[in-house]
Each structure stands twice: as structure tokens, then as C-alpha cells.
Length: 186
Picture 1 (cartoon, rainbow, N blue to C red):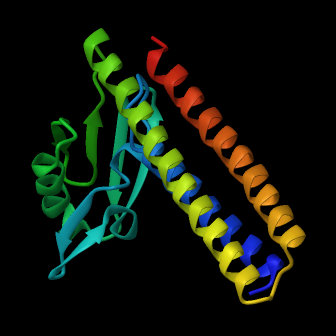
Picture 2 (picture 1 turned 180 degrees about the horizontal axis):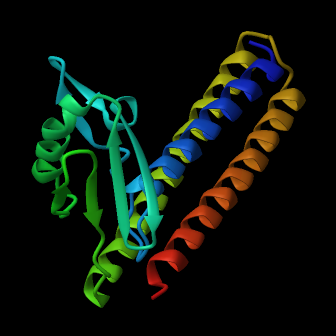
């Protein structure tokens, strides 16, 4: 493999790791209602578990309420069951056309748990980034042994990989810090 191919592979994998963090953070509750809170919800409908976004429009018209408007009114009961069975802790209110979820304000203890979860997710992302760096460095070593790269090219590649991990760790840290701030806002 050439150094460009290795670098591209490493960068793509690091971008994916940060993307996973971004989507995981969207599912963490803050004091405000957000459609992201129900993104992970899967509804048993038409014989399979379907993501809620595929069967309903989800919105947050008020800071403390999520509204789920199914595309097919026949799936309303299935969505209600899925919300009740989930670990979200919301009590769905079904008016026959839409489901409303009232998002209660977070207590201090719950906020601390959410911040702890944000930090766990950040640490998991950093571990994933380090694993990608390790793999990239191994590929560089292998390429040098296979005479695809010189020692200087290998060392330059390792330096570039190190720069990439710094960039993506900083991005992940900023995402987590912003989410922590949102969780702690009252």
C-alpha cells in the first residue's frame, strides 16, 4: 500500500469513529426535547423492527415535548408500545392522530449521570481512534518491510497519522464538551 492509501484509510476510519460519537451524543437527553432522543427507537411494524424515522415524522414543537406523527395511522399503537417498552422513560399520550411525549426536566442526579455517559462515550471514541492509529502504524511498518516505503516515508506517514489523531481527538472533545454544557443547562 502507498502512504496516501494508508493515510486515506486511517482518516476515513477516524471520521467514522467521530461520526458514531456524534450520533450517540444526539441520543443523550438534555433539559430540552429533541427528536434525537427517539432516533434509536425501533418499532415492530409490518413484521420487522423499523427505525422510527422511516414510519413517522418526529418533531419538537415545544422545549418540553416531542410529537410523533406516523405516516400510516395504523402504526400508531405499535409506536406507542415501542415507546413504552423502551428505556427512555417517557409516557406516550395518544390522541388518535399523533403521539406526544412530555420530556420532564432533569434532576441534578440525572444530569450528573448524563454527563458521566457523555464522558464514557468520549473515552470509547478516543480508544477507537487509538486503535485506528495503531492499525495505521502497523500498515506503515508492513509497507516499509515490503519495500513499498522507505524508512523516512514510513516515519513521515506515522507523523501524519499522529497529526490526524490529534485533530479527531480534539473534534471529539469539542463535541462532548458542547453536549455536557447542554446537559448541565437548566
